[in-house]
Image 1: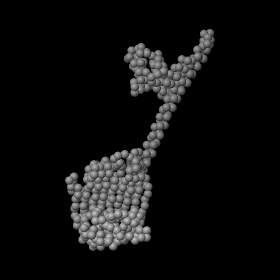
Image 2 (image 1 turned 90 degrees about the vertical axis):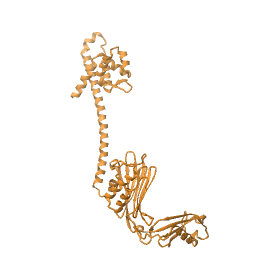
Image 3 (image 1 turned 60 degrees about the vertical axis):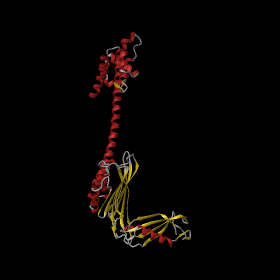
Length: 440
């Protein structure tokens, strides 16, 4: 027999030797009791009862409401006591001496069986606890193993998407199960045959699920977007470092990290412009770069764009969007576009006049019917300066985009006419009718 089993037997027999302690166990086998209730039943000094309860420590459990109840070991001991006390007595005094030895042997056998059952029960509980602990440890091991595999992949990969997420955005990959949902590569004829590469990731943690899209053009970062599908406010992913509430400082830190993976000169210009803005001056122009910060509650937009002669070339820009203090989007097409002409020879008012003149001779077809009789309203008129390519796909040229509104809806659902005008030459680039369906 093991030493632990011998110790349990020794504890049980020595503890049950005193009648007061056996009575305590019997009372608690019937119902839970407080210290005061036991003291009243036993009619002994309180110090004695305290001593007996300390001796019966392994037999009892004290609950949160102050009452005592039997532990598993205590219940097993009660079973042993009942078995020992209920051993059949001799039917007659005459046969007592004849069966004394058999009774003694039988009682000892019962005590042994009860003790063996008690020990088995305790070992069974202990085994179950060990089994549950093992399952929990196994689950923790698998989780840590998965995290280590992801971190190992991140540390050893040359994948520019994961490097950007880790080094620039600083997503804490240890908090997520990361899955690459898709990876596509295509040529963009509309962008001068630029090679566009898009990565889509799913990041799942115990309390959130987010999707991330990363876009690269000509092997240069171009777009980061995040979508939260599960989680709670402030809807922010887990970052390696805690985020700050100061948008300017957050942006500066991010641009510094961006510069560590890309050495574009406009990133330095971004940093210099950031150092010049403050709470009262949220727009700064340095040479041909303009920085504008717009804050609305917990949301903010930070844009660096090319500017010349007082006009902004918005397509050539670097833009950061924050929602609920969390980085929602980074778009960078500054590197992609070149600047052609910067001379704006046509004012806004002149562009509107050119558009109105062009609309006089305009006509469209709706269901086989040519429409030319329509009225253009003097107001409202929308005039947007929106430079875009003219002959070279990625070279921006000054351009006015004019929207003329009609007095009603005409055949084909047409309610407005748009006119594109080159702002350096005054030539009409295009004119079309706008409706909810395709016109011929």
